[in-house]
Structure formats: C-alpha cells, structure tokens
Amino acid sequence: MSRERESIGVIGTGYVGLVTAAGFAELGHDVHCVDIDAAKVQRLRDGEVPIYEPGLADVIAANRERLHFSTELAGALEGARLLFVAVGTPPTYSGDADLAAIYAVVDALPKPSRNGHAIVMKSTVPCGTGVAIQRRFGEQGKESFGYVSCPEFLKEGAAVEDFRHPNRVVIGDDGGWAGDAVAALYEPLGSPVVRTDISSAEMVKLASNAFLSTKISFINEIANVCEAVGADVGEVARGMGLDERIGPHFLRPGIGFGGSCFPKDVAALKQLAGNSGYHFQLLTAVIEVNELQKRRVVAKLQKHLGSIVGKRVALLGLAFKPHTDDMREASSLVLAARLLADGAAVRAYDPVAEEQARQLMPRGVEFSASALGALDGANAAVLVTEWSEFCELDWDAVAQRMTGRLIVDGRNALDPEAVRRAGLSYEGIGRR
Ligand code: UDX
Image 1 (tube, rainbow, N blue to C red):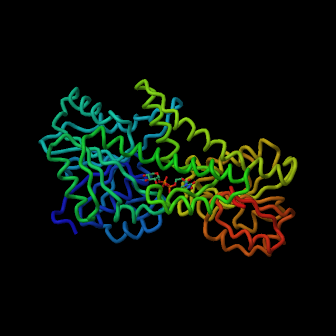
Image 2: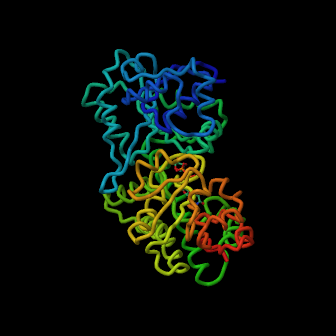
Image 3: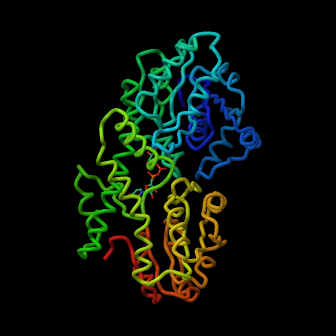
C-alpha cells in the first residue's frame, strides 16, 4: 500500500488507461478516469469491462469504490494533481504517430485554478513530443502544468501482472515536483526506477519496442534459413538464448509480430529518424521481414496443395497473440486477405477475438464457433494464434473432420509427433 493516498486522473480508458487506473486503485489511490466515448464510460459505470484482459475485471471490481468514470475532463483535474494520459497514437499514412488525440487532451485541459497539476504521458509518443507539449502549454497560458514522461511497457494479456511487477519504471522530467510524485506512486511496487530527461524517456520506449521487434524479425530470418539448410530453429534459439548477452526471450519464430505497439512503434521510430535526417536502415529490414513472414504461409500451403484456388483453409486463432481479443495488426488479417485473393475459402475460429475480428477481417471469411467446426472439410489448417486449446486438440478427431491432411503451425506451438500420429502432415516455421 502506498504511504499517501493520491487522487489521480487517467485520460483514456483503453488497455493502458484502464490497467493503469485499476493498478493505482489497487494501490489504494482514488482514480478519476475520463474518456470521450460516453457509451464506454456508461458501461464502465455499470461495472462492465469493455476489453478482454485476464484479471482486469477482478481488480476493477475489487477496487470499484476508488474508481470513478466520467466524460468530463475538468472534473478529473479538480480532484487530481497527476493526470495520466493514455490515449491512442495510431500510425498515419506516413508512418508518423498521429498525435491528434494527445493534442485534443492538451488543448481541452482548462487553465488550472492553482499550481500543482501535471500531465504524465503514458501514450507512446515520438521523441520531442514532451517538449512540444510544454511549449503549447506556454502558448495557452497553462505553463503551470508540469510534464512527466512515464512510458508504459505492459504486455496485453499479462497487463495486470506487468503493472504489479514492472521490469522497470521510466520517469522523464525536468526536475520539478511532478517526477518525484510519480516516483512515489510507483515506489510500493519495488521495481528499478530510471529517472531521466523527458526526451530520453520517450526514446527508451521506442527503442525497447524496436529492439524486441528486431529480435523477432531476426529469429524469423534464422528460421527461414534453417528451412533452407535443414537446421531446427527451436534448437538454434535454445542454443543462442543461453548466452546471457542474448537471452532466451523474444526468439520465438512465427508468422510475424502484430499488435497495437510493435508495428506502430517501429514505423514511428524509423519515421522519427528519417524526419531528423537519419536513415534507420535496420528498421526498414525489420518491417520488411515481418511483412514477408506473414505471406510465407501462403507459399507453404501452395508447396503442399499446389494451387490453392477453391481449397478450404481453416485459420486457428485470429488475435495478434493469445490471451487478448486485440486484432490490431494481427497477422491473420493479411493472411486471410491473401488466401481469399488467391481463390481459397477461409473459415476461422478464435476463442475470444471473433467479435473484434468480424469488424476487421476481409469480407468472405466465414466464422466458426469451434476449432473442429473451422476444420470441418478443410484441405489445410493454419495455426495463427497459439491459444492453448489448439495445443490440446484431439488430432484424430481433426483428421476425421478435415478433407485434406496439412497442418501449418504458424507459431511452432504444436507437437509435430502428435499431429503426425493422426496421419496428418505437419509443417512449422524453421522446424525440422
Ligand atoms: C509489446 C511489448 O512487449 C510491451 O512492452 C509494449 O508496452 C507493448 O508492445 P504486446 O504488443 O502486448 O506488448 O505483445 P508482445 O507479447 O510483446 O508480442 C508482440 C507480438 O510479437 C505478438 O504478435 C507476438 O506473437 C509476437 N512475438 C513475440 C513473436 O512473434 N515472437 C516472440 O518471440 C515474441
């Protein structure tokens, strides 16, 4: 429990905002959440949790009396010294981050009636945004607002635990009271705290996500080479990961990374560098490898099936990773579109993400209420998202349902022997 009970504001009730709000409420603080989406605010007031995030509903329910939901920014400002900003910064066509929602908040903030308010930036923003916002505050006569950059590193699907046990908390400020106040909020979590300037804090977030994306594209390329030379990428990753300098994490090959952060942040960092006159060549390759990786599955299907025109392909899993219903930049979107364009019929199943997927999937994709339903009459199946229920499938039952024999394991999550024992043929990513 934190020593002093704060009243804080959280603007934006998406993944980051809601988890942050729930986490601080659990630490004993009063949290005023603001969102412009009145329907969402009403659902939250009614006790509903509008996103799928394991454990979040329980934390919200257990700390309900300390969580307040409203569409009114001014109300949150009255009660709170620190206003956490967690609104979306989606990519624009140019690859730059779209800061419209951030500036809408900055501009809408009323002139504080007294000193001692600060905004704490949780949204991922390009380096230099904090300085630009401080300038904007100055132009609007709101210079008494403090500014802290406190980037968020939580992973969807594990966000509640990540809030409780962050690897590190990064706090960028220019030496005023607000940085210390944010540090005090996080102190009970006992994690290492990196205190730095605003621009460096912004850069830590972009560089971390770009580095992790680079690791994934790297191991994906190694997997592709393994396929060509007859090595096994799982063994290679194991051998590499034991080197402490490399580490075992983020060396899982697959059909590409997705989600709300990696694709956007890699593009944003590349663009940020480009805007400053630096050509970040490595990131260009990271992005390209990721795009090609999603499409390689089609070539695998063609290798086994010949033409895929008129063939039925089952997609097992649609979300960008398990334990989330998030479909943003999910590899399944590109894969389904490619398969349909090449003349295949696609039937998909995801245990959680169907509602989100229906809004984004290309027209023509059929949805099934179960894995076996999606596999019924399929010539081939592709495991897209490694939900555990797919790893536990009864492969004899699968073989009976399918017309064809091919299982493409896009996440190297299945037991190849179990699949083959049922008379099916197994193809992974860089797996011997
Ligand atoms: C990521 C960062 O991990 C987090 O710190 C940041 O705040 C937000 O972005 P998230 O997008 O929730 O979190 O998912 P993550 O678990 O990191 O996975 C991202 C993508 O990479 C997924 O599509 C996943 O399937 C893929 N991935 C991850 C791989 O393909 N291989 C790996 O080894 C690891």
